[in-house]
Amino acid sequence: MITNYERILDIILDDLIPLTKISINEGNKIFGGFIVKKSDLSLVCLGTNQEIKNPLFHGEISTLFNLFEKKLFNTKDYYFISTHQPCSMCLSAITWAGFDNFYYFFSYTDTKEGFHIPHDLKILTEVFKIKDGKYNINNDYWESFSILSEIKRLGIEGSLSDKIYQIKEEYQKMSEIYQKSKIDNKIPLN
Ligand SMILES: [Zn+2]
Image 1 (cartoon, rainbow, N blue to C red):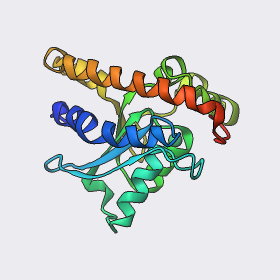
Image 2 (cartoon, protein in one colour):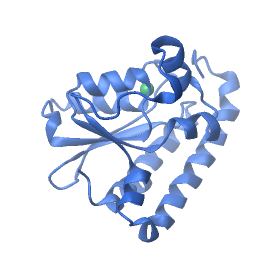
Image 3 (cartoon, rainbow, N blue to C red):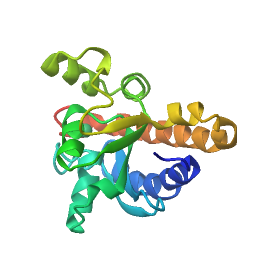
Image 4 (cartoon, helix red, strand yellow):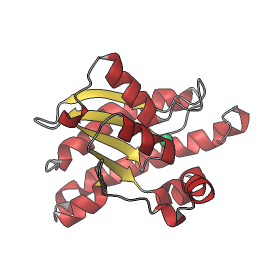
């Protein structure tokens, strides 16, 4: 399990957000992900949403493509980090990729209410009859964690509160850019 959450928040702020700003300005959604080594939390690869090229290229899918481009198949050696709780497609993709874990920053409720993208929860209800996003968070394949819940559980909120606030602010700003641009895009579920 991850113990150094400051490192994870730093990667979001220093590596993922700058990359996401570029893809937002191309018309993509705000979602992204990255993979770090379990041994030293070094960054292996990043990915951002690329739905204007292909509606299946969610942040997590782009991240996984970037991993396998590097011919790295030893997924049990890595932590998978997603900015937002993964949708049903990405849950499956992370599973098929062989990960035994994933961590996310924003929840489904944040995505629906804060970022005005309701499809994660709606697909789970409509297609899978799963209410309120309650998939099996710990199962035979993986364990999943909310980064913010883990930070709270470990009692280290105080020292990380500035970085958490900064991440929330940055995503709100990027979300406003996406919401304005989406009127003109061709993404099927925008
Ligand atoms: Zn997804």
